[in-house]
Each structure stands twice: as structure tokens, then as C-alpha cells.
Length: 222
Image 1 (cartoon, helix red, strand yellow):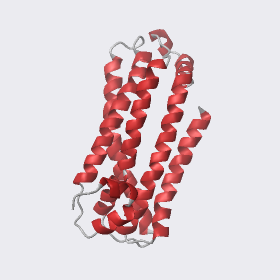
Image 2 (tube, one colour):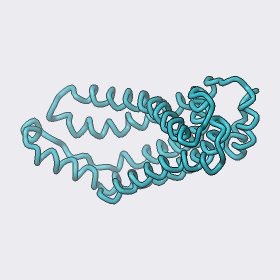
Image 3 (cartoon, one colour):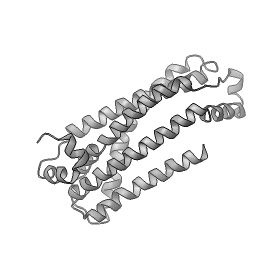
């Protein structure tokens, strides 16, 4: 069965009801996560470029290291998120005597990542508009030896008006599309682990709400 993007996004219960009768297949979820990792890497490159500019005077040649770290970290991080999130849902459903393989959970979590792929694309477009407007402080080699100077530079960077707006908009986009993904994961978990809708909602909702609270807290302390 070829997956229907429309069904995944707006009719996840019917999609997974049909999908559960087929053998686990990670090809399409893997493509979704891979696409998300590439978009995240592009975003990481843009934001990493700002940090590279900040450190360029203090450590000549560090720009390449920072950019590579940002891109590779984003590429790997997306896949790590996929595995960890699947593991959390799998473990939580064990408390409700869920059945079904971990591979099936990986499959449904991968499908549910689709809204976040769209959210990441929007965030990337927003970043392209905002990043040229961000003022990046410069840390000299002498300043690098003083933790107070580095801390002040980072504070000025994070509190730059354009940077603050970008962070706030990006966080809002993440939350909106994460909630959309959560809706898909609930129905996917229900079928993948053979648990009730209520139990699936709890197993998905608890980590999602915890993550949203964490993001909201970080915004509050900026």
C-alpha cells in the first residue's frame, strides 16, 4: 500500500487502521525523517554561521568546525529524536500492557513526523528572513580568556531583538506542528501497540506536554 500524505495528516485513525494489516515498513517514515534532518541541517548551518562569526576573531579557522558541528549535529539529532521518541512511547505503553513491535512504533512515529517536516520548512524560511538582521557580537582572543566577556557576548547575542523574535517564532511553529504530530502519534500508537485511545493519548501526551513546558520555560528565561 502506498502511503497517502493526506490520510496521514488528516485521517490518521483510518490510515493506521489499514496500515496495521501490512508488514512493518520503514522506507517511507525513513524518507520523512531524512527530509526533516536535511531541513534541520540547513537551519543549523544558518544559525551556526552566526556563532562562527562571533568566534572567528578569537579562534581563526573555528568557523569550519562550528558549521560542520551544527550541520552534522542537526542531521544526526533528527534521527536520534526519532529513535528516542519511539522508545519513550514504547516504554510508556508497556504500563498499559501494550503489544506490538518496536519497529511498528518506529514506523508510526516516523509517519507522525510529517507535520514537523512542514514546520521545519517554515522555520527555515523565517530564519532566512531574520538572520541578516541579527547583530553578532565579536569575541577577541583576549576576551575568550575571560568567562565574563564570553557570557556577556552570548547574552547580547541571544537578546538581540531579531534573534529573540526568531527564537520565539521558531518555538511557536515547533509547538503548533508538534501538537499536530502528537495527534497522529496518538492514533498510530493506538493501533501499533493495541491500546485504548485514552491510554495512547496519555502515552503520547505526557512527553509532548513535558517538552512544550520545557520550551516555554526556556523562552521565559531568555
